[in-house]
Length: 394
Image (cartoon, rainbow, N blue to C red; front, side, top):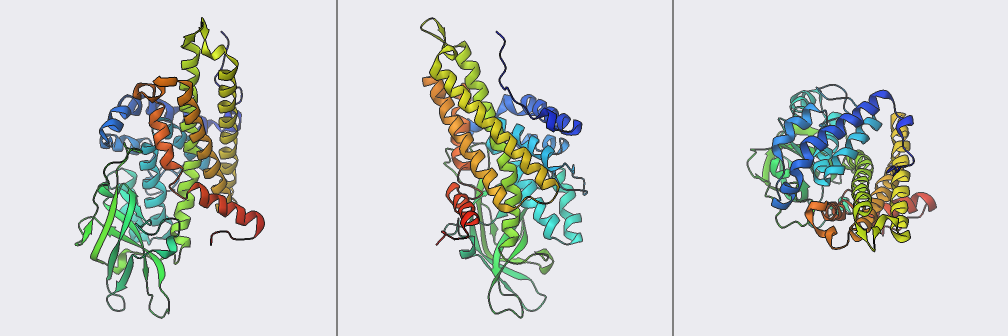
């Protein structure tokens, strides 16, 4: 039988270095992550033993230049996200948070001293970071955050109080990038600033969130701040206001837009293989019209999602990719991947819910990816505002 899982590819659009990065990432993920991920998902544990290997592969701080980071281009970085999420959204989340939400703000908004202190060990996987923005009562509206910082005199330490929720990596983190409202000297209204809150500072707790039915191989927790004294030297000085955390989220959403394609590819390829082997009524079920229709729809949506990601990657190379385009990438590709997982689950019938067939795990994971880093609805409204000039947020 002469058949191929894809009738279109982007190989011809990639440089030789990008193709090598993609191949090496896939080989690593299939060799080191695939054999252990189902066990970790069932146990709700994260494979911490793989962190040094993620570092060796250049997955931590991938797109940052210098400081021991890989300095990958946007497309090469996206291709690594595909392969990480092809195995599990939780693994991609770990690398995304470390790279885009912890290391990137230090790189973009930090001092030279902060960069030298944190980025090299974070690139080596020796120090782990997390990103504290979401709160119990402040999700899609981060401007309503209650976490606050009060400076103890001009040039003095900051005293932080508040709580952050749904924080990937927080129970593992050596440094938490925390966003809080503070009253800068000379200003009349509080402004959002970023702080590097370190493990061991008195009053900091990072309890783990238990009972998740999604992203079980990812560590999620809280950041609880009770009169935490943070030196003024730990303030990220190069940004003020919501553009600080939102700039980080744009970096993370870009990687999610690529990673979701990997999740979709994984479930599609497993559904294709299963239906070509599963015999009913004397023939493989892949030979029936409705099954082929489903496979064609999955295949075509994946190819379009991959082309969208590649296009955004080339825009990012030139510095012309804007946040609304990233919203489109994240929104559409995650929706596509979630639909693909639901369709693939149905194609496997009862076997689709079994862990060994690796459909239900990505399906459950993608339910979270659909919500975090900006819900599907919030991205819809952001794009709608860009199209009409009218805000429907409130």
